[in-house]
Length: 393
Ligand code: TGC
Ligand code: FAD
Image: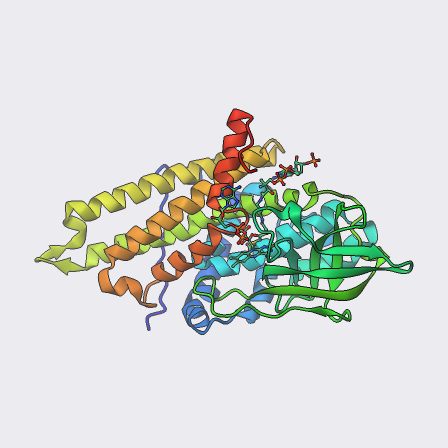
């Protein structure tokens, strides 16, 4: 199997000129790391449905865990453009590896940083930043996915500690995570975040098998059977559904950039293949129908690149609204999944093999279009934002 990564990033509108030298340096170093560490092994791990755990240290070193968390807590202290570029490059390699980074940075480190006590920040953040400690985020339940406000996982005040009961499903990183940020209702029905540590009695994390998507990412459940959670593990700075949903803003922002990375890889692969592959005596790149596909791909990628660049600018100025971030996530993933499907066809039979990354991206993106809010939920978020009329319920 060929493992040489010939990737050349498309930049049709010279968007590089909108980036600072620091942004380009960060982007290029992550791009090199992905070529060296991810591309050579990812197909095999994906085929075996195994998470490449040995990448965790490197992900910590390139600043993928909590890029925007301040340096005093072990983060990289970078801006949101850098964060986006890091996610773009990692997902160019594989959505599952980007998932691991998204969960760690946006869904575990962010809530501890934004809503945690000083003790919690000092205890967890520096180790999460290096990957020495890994985390997961428990919001979704078997009966409450798009509607997380209906959750039934709950905790009671038991005097010296809280008693946690319930179950979470579809949790990225759960099978190996050391800690879980879990969202549960108190006796008054108010949602709070709790840090649950592996090893607490009654806490188990069974793995979910037989996935055809994100096969190189570990997914599982979180099961709480009368788990005694110390009171100091409650995140003191937030209550209500706004808590977990504000973490999703961070992760959805990263996906808006990341999914475009997967799209760029599919386009680049299809373009190169079409110039080399000959049928009827000439490269298939010379046929109008193949050119239409490529022309549409680069157009959608370019529109997406401009959208996430603008979103990054707004995010740096703390002006990006949840609805704008939602649109970015939806648009990039839809763009990517469509490009992956078209690119796969351009490779003919070769497109279904692991010789090329396209089919893996295509299958991965079926999860990405579902998690962090499904495509349809994001349409409804935009619908609500522009009409003022809620259509969820
Ligand atoms: P609703 O009544 O609209 O809102 C409840 C409270 O939350 C506030 N809010 C937000 N705050 C910050 N950011 C956002 N994006 C927010 N959206 C809403 C809202 O203002 C309100 O605040 P307050 O103070 O007035 O109480 O809530 P709803 O129950 O009607 O639901 C709305 C809906 C459907 C949009 C929302 O629940 C939703 O986004 N559903 C999708 C669920 C989802 O995205 N789950 C993701 C799980 S995590 C995951 O998938 C990780 S995958 C990771 C990986 O591997 O990469
Ligand atoms: P449902 O909510 O049951 O939706 C089913 C269908 O109904 C969808 O098409 C949806 O769009 C549609 N629908 C639902 N409500 C409406 C409505 N009001 N109007 C119109 N259509 C509607 N969750 C976590 O908490 N942490 C994680 O780390 C995590 N990682 C994940 C990893 C993977 C690989 C996957 C697949 C999921 C992960 N999730 C995680 C869960 C993910 O966020 C949910 O799958 C997602 O929010 C959708 O919930 P659901 O699967 O229950 O689908």
